Length: 162
Image 1 (cartoon, rainbow, N blue to C red):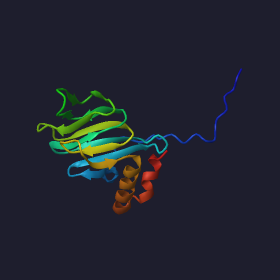
Image 2: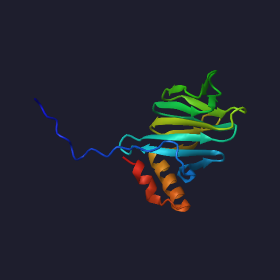
Image 3: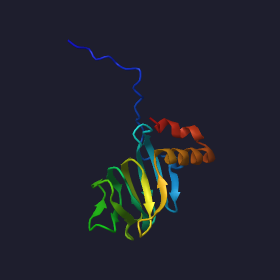
Image 4: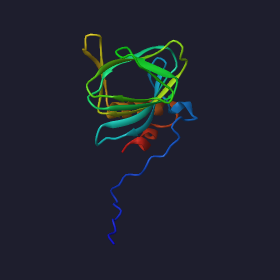
């Protein structure tokens, strides 16, 4: 019998309620747009979060250099560049390199989607010119600043860092 030893270098698991009871956990990203961090992988650049949108309209036009996986928990959304609509219970695979414009339709008062993002997110305009950038490190900084202001404390974000 071969026994596989436990390594002391294995980081701890994360097991949290995905949709928090405390609204302070949601980090504002844009008007009517928040994210709830679940994981910041500082080795691979991956991050997992919930995206919540509480008004219809365009959320962002962006490009990912890595794969993105999504699962819609509530509501619906779509990309202008495609003819499908992601609704509650739908799984979405986004290939690396694609540029798309996320929009929440007028008949959806609230959308919440789980996203697993590998790599960065580059915001682009209609000509494909970069207008902004996010990665796991900028997301950590956003969380720390938000939690420092709202009473949870900047180090609240550290529980999601691996």
